[in-house]
Length: 174
Image 1: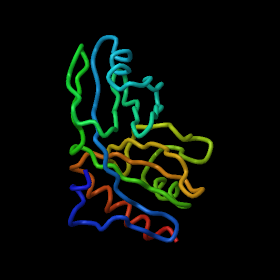
Image 2: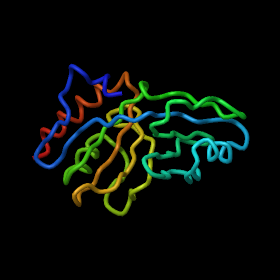
Image 3: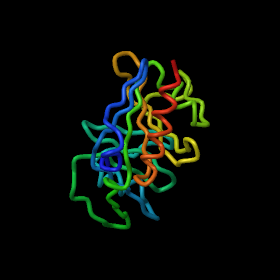
């Protein structure tokens, strides 16, 4: 995951009131066609989240990814297909960026066409959209030090372009 940015950026990138960093976890896409929710709940060992939500249990998260599709972030490396649910390892297919700080919302607003203002995008929610025409998933994480934190997932092939946009935009915030 972080490998897509190696040699291009030193992380974290820290600015006056926002930081950009990379996080790395195993990520599995779980999807199927019939009775997916019950099967995914069994595989994940936790309740599936409602549309646009994230379920957290310990260090694992189950993220709504669309109809009959979820993403599991975990330390597990041994998930397999079974009973009509297909487990696809996305660990090296997506880069996970953390955007945090007082200006996190302002930075994301430079390219994200969603209202992520306080009260509109709650902790534990996920939205699938784009930043500067690059497809992303944005998760509202718990605040860190009283400041908002967002996690942005991007396909590995677009990670450098997205990070360049975010770094350039962050440099112009203050």
